[in-house]
Image (tube, rainbow, N blue to C red; front, side, top):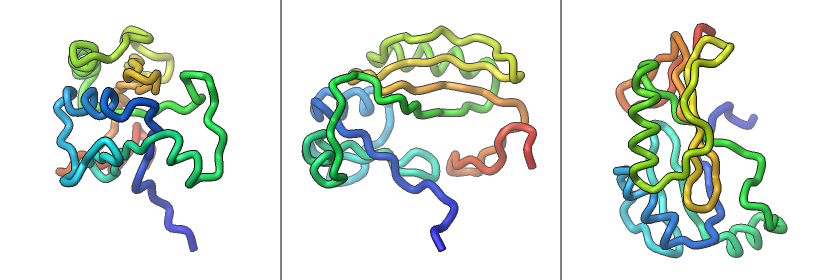
Length: 145
């Protein structure tokens, strides 16, 4: 059986040096052994890895798109409604491009979108009832049980 979990998200980087520096500038701690050939950041219960796009495409038998956005977004949920705006401002100060300013959403939460230097979209969000464990891993999302 395939376990129901997400362990690793890999971004195929067009410029490893720039993308790696961006995530370091966010204050995220790089996994030991990181380099411009492979880099990783432990985010709560999942690993965000960076790998050169051409190498990842060869390994995954894929053809990289010329578009800057792949149609995938990443999400970071925060503890409070107010924390959305603070995290958004912090990301922009670290070099993220503002994509959509934080706003209250119809589903009862608040979120905004930023893009990293290669155009990968990150939603910074708060959802009522979301709970994290001591590592920051998602335990409960929204009001679902």
